[in-house]
Length: 374
Ligand code: TRH
Image (cartoon, rainbow, N blue to C red; front, side, top):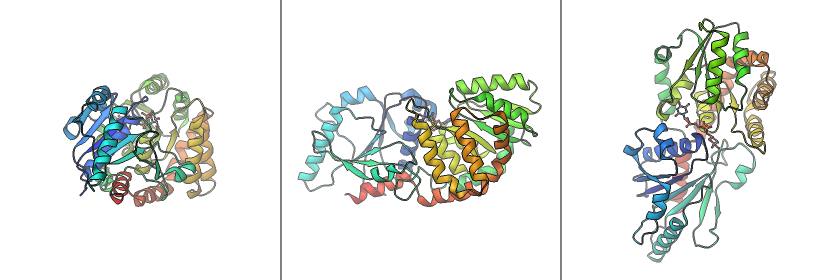
């Protein structure tokens, strides 16, 4: 049980689905841990509606601008637990109302509201130094705690449902039926592809054509998927060796099935990257592309943590393939090789998954941290 009666989660969508995807997964986890009354304040409710068509049943979804106006009213009551995500900067009116609520609670000897900024995921070392640090507001008496997801004990961990592993295991006996329901061939190996337009899907198409076994390719919606599907039709219109399956955009609660049903994957961003690791899926990671090339730094930092768990020469091969894929330098032969060595990654991925599960859930860590300050 929690001592927090109400929670406000603030989510600005920069682009794509990851911002809302992570925020909604957090909301969902907090509800599962007993948090009551979530307001989900977002500037793009339509993105959330795609990820979670039933969001309104679980939380009050409020458009950002109208909420900022609501927060100006004298009787406005901010939540007990407040979560800014990815440094999205809350409306000034809200911060002011929150500072007033805090002052009143302290004056009355009551617990003040707790205020987080939950940041992006990165495996970079500096994250440990910045995690769990309180920042001060430039003008108001309003401390805010910086919380970082991550892969090590000195970070907040990842969002993981308590029954994640049992849900995965109960799905597995029905895996073939699921593939058949997508119109994939249940007897083939399956590749899942979810990447950015900048990634060279041509390499995937040509590499698949070089493989000596037949594949299903589950292609997530988007520009890169459109291109890949077109290329695969040119290479194998009948689907004899490569069966291309365009998946519809599934609700987030069903997204894992695509990963569980696959033998290898191309995944992207933050949330699908985490889910692929929990699934123990051999993957190449398309980090979110940025002009300053931070995407390469992110990939290297994660490889530095994961790759030492792999035996040689697999470790070197996986690192090289991952980097070449991200940099657009992977050859079709290199991708064909990845498809071949992907199963050999599995034991290390299972160990890695166990480590992540044992680190425990980010939402639980946030609640524990907030409660310990009460
Ligand atoms: O959509 P993304 O590219 O999001 C990115 C990253 O989060 C990045 O860090 C951030 O800076 C940028 O957005 C703005 O990839 P990501 O993080 O994997 O999010 C995709 C979400 O969409 C994830 O929650 C899974 C979900 N999803 C579904 O629910 N159904 C689907 O069918 C598919 C393909 C995805």
